[in-house]
Structure formats: structure tokens, C-alpha cells
Length: 353
Ligand SMILES: C[S@@+](CC[C@H](N)C(=O)[O-])C[C@H]1O[C@@H](n2cnc3c(N)ncnc32)[C@H](O)[C@@H]1O
Image (cartoon, rainbow, N blue to C red):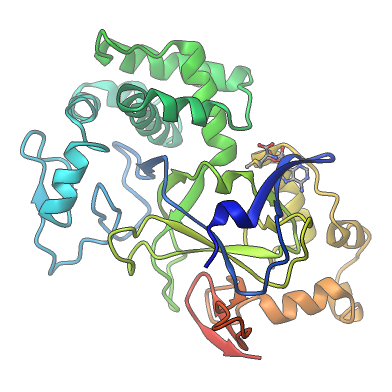
């Protein structure tokens, strides 16, 4: 299988900034990119209870079931891991000595009263600032990669950066200090570029919660389309030691030179919800064919327009399993023969076509 660098090329796309295009003709189901996270941090607030019913390993984010032997960080004991190797690995990366001290300080210090004046999201952003400072200490070149991503701070982000910086900067070691400005830059990049890693699917609910946020430095260049030609798969709770890698597969054949886009959320969402999320979270108005058509729709027009290409696409590719609505993409081709089985990227459901 060709490596992703020979399959994708970065280009300037009119009205969208940088994007990824097919460097050669590619086939439905083909894996076009597999990538490990540059930054990965928990989505649980520091003090407020998490919305997830699960407890996860603090390094690889696999669920810690009641049968799992738990390995605690010997220094702080707040942080728990699914194996000795995850603990050892974390001590040299995500849970370094500095992270351990910083998070312990935040957890024990009466900061919780300060955080009470802010939404719980602020506590998650504090985790992000600690994780990105850790990257700064261990791998400054990777932090520069992160800083080259899309996103500019506005005044609201500067206010958040000032608050978090005032709490965390006393803990910065002398050899590495993030300024308020750099903290604001990092928060702005994180807002536009992070992917969510989710709790496992369950047909009886509850809705899946976000267990962690991750930055994938190449995948972040996929632009959005409401009728995407690729989608992401992840295997956080079922995968091997690379369980936080993200995998992108093509939904349909893509000719050389065509842009490859993903959807930034579940594809079945209605026009007004898509429009709101894209403006509020990503700062743009989508100009795709589906949006242009649906902008003029009244109620019940989906049925009346059932022969439109995007309506046919949704009928084929939205998973119908209860409590799911994930995206169904073909399994990878075998010996260059396309698969006639679609797999859901949310629940793993398989459907023959
Ligand atoms: C994760 S980044 C994608 C890479 C980005 N285009 C770049 O130049 O780095 C998300 C940003 O890309 C732009 N973008 C993505 N999809 C778009 C679309 N369909 N139309 C216009 N802008 C889009 C928006 O500025 C959005 O905030």
C-alpha cells in the first residue's frame, strides 16, 4: 500500500485556505491517511463531574473496566493507567514530571473557586495549556508545527489565555515559559483543529460523550464538505498500542487532483444546524451544492427531492442503527477489488450494497 504522503498533496483551495487533494486516482474504501496525535488531552473538567459514565486510562484513553488492573502514578495517585507500559510511556511523555506537578497543583490548589466563575470548558482548556506546554518543553519543533496551523486568537481567547496563564505560569520551569500571547495562539489553534475521541457506541444510549481531544497535524488540513468523499475511523477502545491513531478512508472513488473533504460532524444534520455549527465553531459559511439547495427548502422537502444526488448519498451513507447516524464507508479494497460492504465509522455496523 502506498504511503499517505504519496496519496495526498496540500494545495491552496479557493475560499477555503489550505486543503488536501488526491495526488493520484484513488479508490473507494482506500485508506488515505493514518496518523498519531501531536497533542492529546482529556475532555473531563478538572473539578466538575465528567458527563461520561466511563473512566479512561489517562494516557491511551481506553476504558478502565472493573476487571482492569489499575496502575496509579506513584507521585500523584490522581492519574490512573491501564497497564505498566502505559504508565511508563506516560511518565516520559503525556504525564511527565512537570505535567504531574502542574495537574496536582491545579487539582489541590483552591483554584476550584476561581474556576467557578467560568464554564467547565475552562478547566478542559487548562488541561490543554498544560499538555501544550509539555510539548513545548519536550519537542519545541512539534510545537512550531502546531503553531503553523489555522486559527487566530480573538479578544475572548485572549481573556481566557490571561486567566489560564496567571494560574499556570508560576509552575512553568525556568527553561521554558509560555507567554500570554503564545498561550492565546495555542488556544486559537486548538479550537479550530482538534478532533474529538468519543466513548464507545451503545444502542441504548446515553449519547456518546467526548473522552479526549487530539490534534493530528496532517489530518487537520482536510476541509469540510456536507457531502464528504472521505471519513474518519478510530479504534480507541478496540485498537492495539496505536489505539489513538486516526484513520481516514474514502467513501467513493476520487480522481487525481480532486479535493478530499470530510464532514466536521455527522452528515445527517439539517441545514440550519450545519450552518450554525460551521459559523460558531469554525467561522465560515459552507458554499457546497447541498447547502445551496437546502438553503431554499421548506419543511418535508427531503422526501420531495429524493432523487437529488446528495439525498441519495445520505440514504446510502447515513447509518440507520438506533442512536447512531454515523457515516458508512466501504471497507478497503482487497487486491484492488472494491468491497461491496459499507462499515459505519461510529458503531461499526456492516451493510452489504
Ligand atoms: C481544520 S482547518 C482546515 C485547514 C485550513 N483550510 C487551513 O488552511 O489550514 C478548518 C478551517 O478551514 C476553513 N474551511 C474548512 N472547510 C471549509 C469550507 N468548506 N469552506 C470554507 N472554508 C473552509 C475554515 O477557515 C475552517 O475554520
